Length: 374
Image (cartoon, rainbow, N blue to C red; front, side):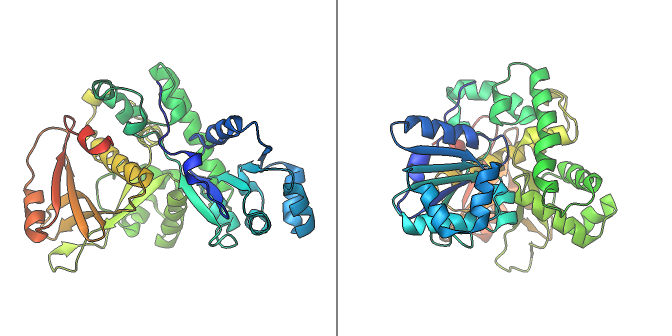
């Protein structure tokens, strides 16, 4: 299956700014920077990896003269997996300040930000790009063909490596390896997770709670852990692009609820691998929540790619009426109900009554591409 990334390094580069590319492991960051280096092979390009011992030693030394001498010959500096270099933020700041026209690109998972505090030294000296699983708009297919593979994406997700596999067996093998390596490699290295079993239990609990509002206390009761531990684990899962937390939308009206949160998986293939459920859509009883997760994440990826910077919420009343997705930007509100089949929504009608200026939409398997393709 062919796809083409909408986000391009060329669009994001700017003088006096390093570019930091975040995203989960195996999402295509290395492929992207190598392709950029190849396009610019007529220039002086350095491509290095953060686990290079000599580079770690140089940057960790903090010696300005040596770091600047190292950078002098190159027009473009690319450091992949930069999270392995402890002093990467401060060293990059030195180079940006001394040579503002050099193009500097760093990649890393979000643990890169957590463990190294790269953002603080580079305040005002960097832009970021977040690379996520392939979105519908990036598939090089007609809308008819996109709909033909929809069921497959609901089950196996849209990691690049998974999309490139031809058989169900190959997809499952990649997903199982993905879950058992990248989840733990990035998360456990932070030394904040002392119980991998508890981490798996939390992920499984949340995998069965897609589309439902939950609290940390409820998850804690399910997995037998205290609230603070659950909160810390979930925070790390958010920052390593496994889970996306969504809060309730409220303008402090008395009948609205906003205390609990929903959680969606950045990739449905990862979600299904965690609970080992790869059955066909027609044989599943969770197609409704798969659909909601899919629509939410595609809308979120679209907003991120287009730099719309929308805020995402859900909405629920004390009476139990709920709208799946609410977006807001500059005071403009849109509400979305995710329905696998064509069904009207009294919830949207109530939302429209409560927020008369809001746009309301029902997203089903027949019209979903109208909302996702741009």
